[in-house]
Length: 199
Image (tube, rainbow, N blue to C red; front, side, top):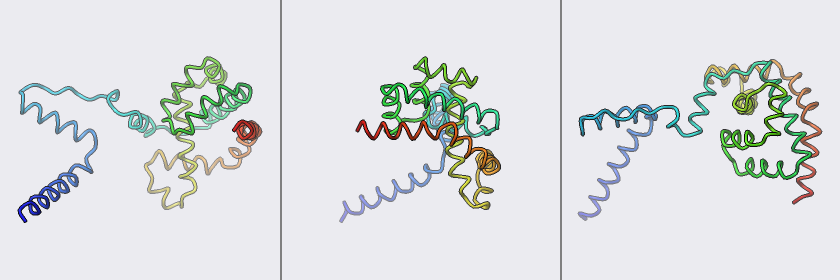
């Protein structure tokens, strides 16, 4: 009976602690940990910077204020068209990137993989778009596609930048669809066919 009570108390204590910790962000936890260290040893704790954040958090920090614009978006579209063209001509490169994409590799790691390929950098240079600008535009665009399909009420509830990007896609819906079909359509179809044949 005693052991049952002890187990119940432990479970309750863990649940309470988890409930208190869950809503706190990285900043709150870091601040509290720093305070605890100051009290415990009298020394100032090391300060966390953006470099200490996980990749996903670092990317989210940059995306928070990243607005899609016509100039940057069409640079991205054209650069991706060049990259697709390169992938149609180099099966090994396509397979290398495709395996990473299918494995769910995070965008910043994919960016580094692409930046290690001189021919891909040439594709980006043709459109004067930096690797990070390409990554941010791609992630913001993919997210905006989902957000643009939401109801007006739900879009209004999104964070300001995400809402603005969803409205950007809605506003330019027809030229974007036509442009993507023209620049990407045939290349993506050909790649899909080759990938099916190579299985």
